[in-house]
Length: 482
Image 1 (tube, rainbow, N blue to C red):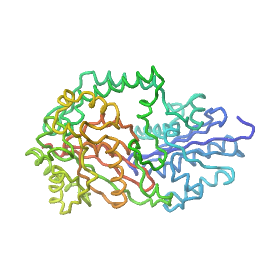
Image 2 (image 1 turned 30 degrees about the vertical axis):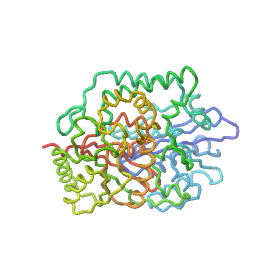
Image 3 (image 1 turned 45 degrees about the horizontal axis):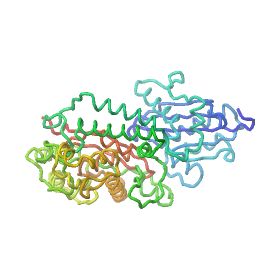
Image 4 (image 1 turned 60 degrees about the vertical axis):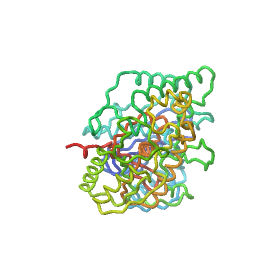
């Protein structure tokens, strides 16, 4: 321990439902060696993310005080809300947070505690503790230090305490290993769960056939990682990394959109309104004639109508949503298959449909109407490039996934601001839905190839004013079964 008795406290909290089963984690570190001096974690029952984060802060400060009551403390958290409020830059409006903030402020004199926001990937120790606490709570137990898997060795702790390196995190060897693992998984025989119509392994609008595309994309990743491993070129590895810190405004084609930041959080750091979230219920349209044939069907093709099966699916999902009674607004892609699906729901719920251009599907250029195999045969180099990089566009002037992600992120921000506190049905397509989920989770672009989405299925994402997002991965087609 250093003679000046400085301590680092890292804390986090989480809620599986927001509000939902919640827990916190905190760790006290030596700032010089990175040594773990104390850990604290607890399952706290049903609470919000922010309450859990504040409780983690209080626990971390108290653990530091038990070690050295006269220490100077450097608190690092990935919650901008807590950091900004405890630093005095944001007002504390929510009644549940006021007493917790006051309690945190009493642990040490204000002049001996400073706060710093850090990105989520640098707060992994506390995050793991919080998740362990929630896992223990799910089993009806409380977290115990002896059962923790979150301890870091001194070297790892020093890395966590240091500023992020100038170059991309990770290394080419690790990237190659992950690609080999992905290839092994993709090459193994797979059995897809039946979709609503009983057909196994159905593609999403002809996208991402589970066997063909996953294996091909993994091979492309392996080739890129192997090249990087041999040459020291980390570009391929870096493209898979998604950072959670606020991004500077960019105009280049390669810019990655922010993952789940609410518009207010990027406009001068104004004090957040911690009211009800904007909840997007994400509904993929029903089947078209192209769906069972696994053909690319985007916004640049024939704009097909729903098939007879798709019309039945639209009616079934309308009935299911009417029974739930939670939808307040409906917004749809302009493409015919989505408008038809949305109209069926709107007729049942008695609501109007707003058309949003930003929810349209990817333009697949010359691949429109082709199967994956046909596109592979006709445009092998272009398809390989598309599988290997989100910046690559389909043949003939289609949209890259990076372009679609920026469009979808901008649409998300507009709708989240317009429908704060409302539950909105977004009737859209495979790529926009997967992109919304990916950005909310902070997953890398290649995760699009790891998701499968059934026709007329439902998922949901809730967007809070402090920039947090809660994802509910239902992929629910129960409304389609008798």
